[in-house]
Image (spheres, rainbow, N blue to C red):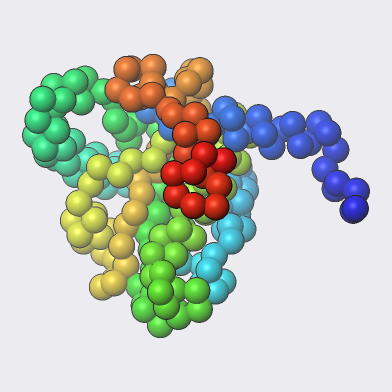
Amino acid sequence: MTDPVFTEEQRAGVYRAIAERRDMRHFAGGSIAPELLARLLEAAHQAPSVGLMQPWRFVRIRRPALRLAIAELVETERLNTAAALGERGDAFMQLKVEGIRDCAEVLVVALMDGREKHIFGRRTLPEMDLASASCAIQNLWLAARAEGLGMGWVSLFDPAQLAALLQMPEGAKPIAILCLGPVETFYPAPMLALEGWAQPRPLAELSYLDCWGNPA
């Protein structure tokens, strides 16, 4: 068997980043050095993608007025989500769901236009473009955690409205607003678990052997 390339300490660092990654909502302002931001985006860009299509596109938001407009889109969807949740709407409104106004950097991740021409790996599973872009986001998340930066994935927005706001071409679709930057502290557990909104389920409940529902 081939000797592992990583040392034991290096492997521990990888697993630590995975275990301590959090979907952050509370940020401490500040800034991110250009070379560090470039390193994080390069880590995202190294993600695997079906058919090597690299469907991700990153839009860095720098204009304060544009950041505010994005925050307002999120607030509109937050209210709509609360209404759709019915009895849980009031509890939902107590949750902090984004840090757009407070974080150092805002990035919008979108799927590129013209995705339909990519058939390799997508003929029966066209959503693999979304899966590939999600891998890029996860790469960025883990790299940010290793660098001591927090990141939060915001999905409360109308994709068509955000696409129009950012002048995206027809067929492109925003899938994530990423809040990135320094934090005072990382949550010791997922924020929604700490707030009593939901609790993570153990792996044993989600793993099957040979057929659906058969415990592994």
